[in-house]
View 1: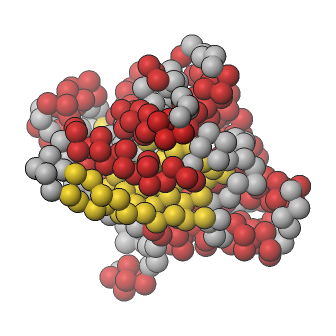
View 2: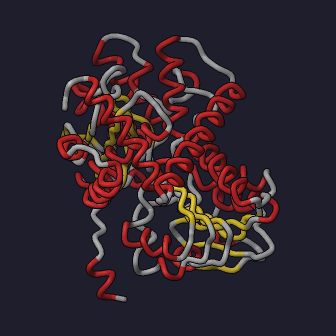
View 3: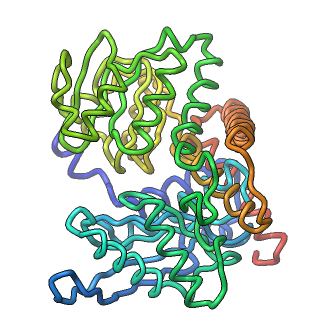
Length: 419
């Protein structure tokens, strides 16, 4: 097994190119379109100085990738993480293009990142890093060009600082430059829960196809950040039994079901590992539990050729971006495990970001009920379209999702005369 792992390609940029090739071959897409889609249109690498609280100056590096703007402006998150790389940002921008295509949004994909550990910063330092990065990329973003959003370790407050910085640079109030903002400066109701809520809608559709009811299903969630935690609460409210959750320190398991409210309190005040009555497990053990639904809601490449044979879930709903490698995908297909792919399962976030952008442009804002209803309609329609195409071509849902996106983007490139 070690040799298999050593040979497996875990570079996210090369992984997404492989996924594009597979879907394009089934569709018989023209080669020039495929070559365009396999590369970002633009990648900006920046470095910028930030004065720290002790008076020293640190130079930070970051990236912004814009994949394809045939359908409309690019759109995608900004992450603050010590492991950010250019290849990761390029890949994530490409996944964003296909995610927008799956749910039919008028966006291409963008993604950004700063190489840093935000946990090391004071609030003032975090603000200066956030504003510094926006200043560095301001020339290539804008409400009609490229609209960033929150991602790993970035928050609505960080988005508010970035929007303010852009507005000051341009000399005009520009809430539409960024989404995921606080409500007070143009954020959308329902945005905070959107990624998790969209994932839950796709899970419900998958269960409906199988004839299963929520109260008959057990769930394990790897990652208890924003998406994982909210998904756990929403699923609990619907009757699902959450038997395991984890964060970066490890996980807890209880076959009788976890008290998600108690787990959340521990997350806020101490550590989930102090949960009373549960068994402490590792993140690796959580992935291999015998459950109905597994939700990877952390980082990419957690399900690989090394552990795919040990996965026992019936469904995997990818709340994280790129949690499953292509080699693992092949093993999961052989095992009959249904994977609801990231570009579909976690598209709720970008969908409500789109709603936020539309509200900013109109300067007219919707109720949370209206936002959630529109999100539900969008996610159900997207799932059904992917399922129908997957059944037609006898492929898995990931391939079907890519096929729909590739068709939509290629049609736009043809319509604009690019190919």
